[in-house]
Length: 207
Image (spheres, rainbow, N blue to C red):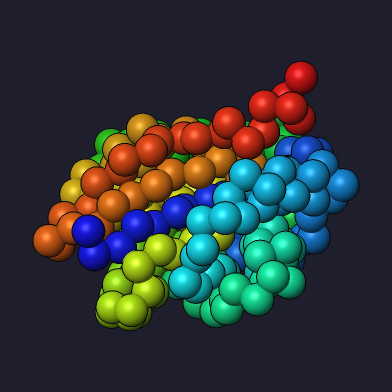
């Protein structure tokens, strides 16, 4: 094995809970539930001995992995791990008009129209371009064998698709919730999901 990547989504924010569109242009903090989720993940994985943590430039990812940083695990922020930009939808309530536009956009992506973006936003292909730069950087660090990556829901789905050799139009194959985990094994240049959508650490919070 060359690397084992632990890829998680950040903890919950108030905007997540309220259904407000939150892309790379909205820097919301975790709420109380999000911090509970982050702590639950930390206690479940604190003995994994991560060599390094990579996060987006948005505070919700840092706050999610902060317990590990307090224990001395080094971390780095990468622009390529930022959430997709939702353009004119960002920071807005999901009104019927926005929901209709969003559903139309996602439908086009599922049909392979990955260059389509909302006004002033990013397309999946634009996102993938910066994700590839981030992953090339992460994978180039040969001494880092076990790596934690904390990022965002839509960006995570798109990353997992192309990283494992799937058509990015199949992005919705990968479900997610706040702090859900995917483990990806990197071996001989092949990336394989070996632990999909693990939310066992959230069991006590879900009851």
